[in-house]
Length: 243
Image (cartoon, rainbow, N blue to C red; front, top):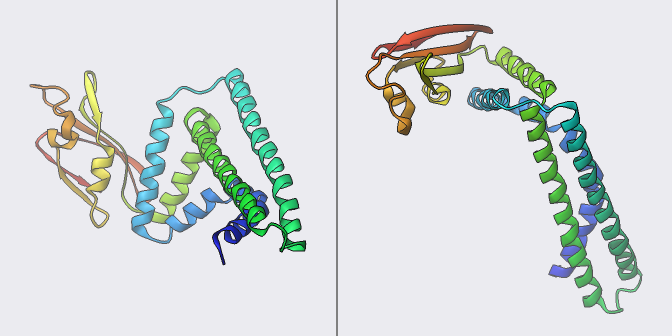
């Protein structure tokens, strides 16, 4: 099978799968990711860490007003219209050429299949553009929507119930009234066998260094274990042991 004929079938496949893949991208992706994460403890811990970090970033962002969401939805509708319009034009170019080639394969075969190959490349590119846009829209929703934040909290609780293990929700090192650095990821990465044993000190912040020089600091930790949320404060130079 030559390259032109291969690209022709790729274009036909892209054309046929456009709608089902769009539905899957919008409905099934979070469900599949959460199910896949729950099949392995390491993947589960990683997924929980990702969701927790996303929720923390979202809570630090502003929430879109109703007017801002109307503007953003209008922008999204324009993007969807561009995708449908482009896919329709490409379909109108691809299908007649495909039917013509099937009925008259001996008439200008290389030119027809080359043309279909070019259109197929644009079809695949248009699909890529659609999925890229859906990712951007979902991330924007996660960062600026109270509904999405609540969904993230529900996902975290669901996976925590599957896990029942130690998870650091938030860890801040420094002096609360002056400056604190977020070391949540450092602590989660240090969990071994469902337990945490780590020395509290400036090394936790890495390149950021000492948040409050010449002042005694604390590590404020919010964590979950066995489905319960707990808090603990440990002083600098001492070991933190969880649970």
